[in-house]
Length: 126
Image (cartoon, rainbow, N blue to C red; front, side, top):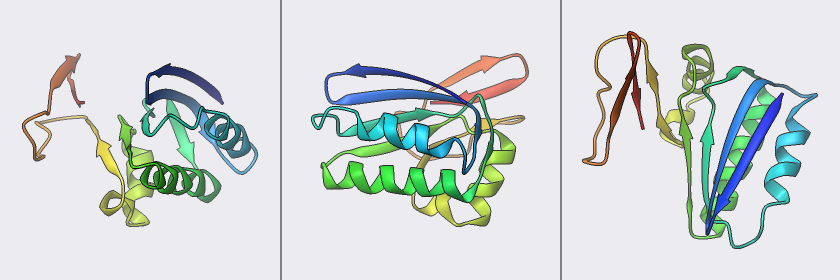
């Protein structure tokens, strides 16, 4: 698993690639826990994440709670269909804010801040 983190003021943007499993989830957990306490916005780009286990889900739920304690938010961007299916099976789309990769059609969402980028035949909602 690879994690790339950039911090801009109170916002941390993290790109997670590979597999988030029981073996690799401590790496993401450590990366998040080592962020400055001034960070309250967590932007997680999962476009390169191939798989997530229950241990990985636990880290994301803990990050959501951390963001809420700090008065901020967590946004998950671009999960693959496979990763989104795992979120869906566990009821997490009702908990997380997710900008989802759509393989076809338009993203059906709410809010005037939605932006669309096209890459090949895929549409990305940011």
